[in-house]
Length: 84
Length: 134
Picture 1 (cartoon, rainbow over the protein chains, first blue to last red):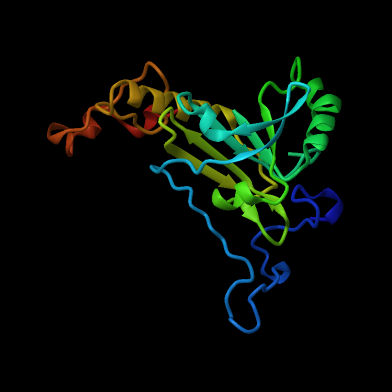
Picture 2 (cartoon, rainbow over the protein chains, first blue to last red):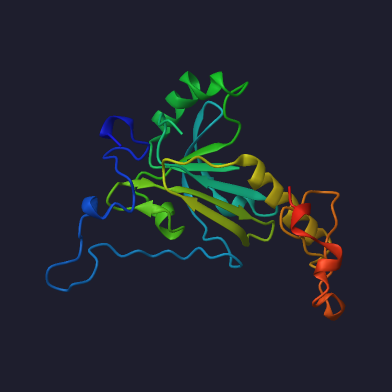
């Protein structure tokens, strides 16, 4: 996969390709440089957030919990203007 | 429906106005969230630090705010919306029966559901076979 055609912008690589993974462990502590704090689990309350959004011509903010009471589909994707 | 990426709201606007509005009449109807620092993606376990982008994570959240389903794909493979809709309908059915009914693999609205209980143990084969999944 070339950098130019990748859907994982901006660097572009096939995930799981060990030759391209960078080892980001901290040299002194031997712990990962960045702390991953995933807390979303099926069967548990969805972690709340508030973030800027674009909605129907307006720049606004959206808060997940303002939508509780309805079914919510929350979808993440790598980037605007990518191919898939 | 909420969509999230690390792009700015300005890029969201450009993408909506110049491309997505040519695929969807009236443009995107839902909020396009900007998660520039990946903070939302991190708590949902979909942010890739080395790439600085979010994976194709999809979460179905019920009216109580409980995550009922999640799916995460790496970037090159797209999702299948029909399967997401099927799952939402199945979760809505289970919820409507207050959990008394369960939906077998591949269940579509109108098809047979299962009522879990001692009488069904070892006898699912009598009412459901794999070829019923379409």
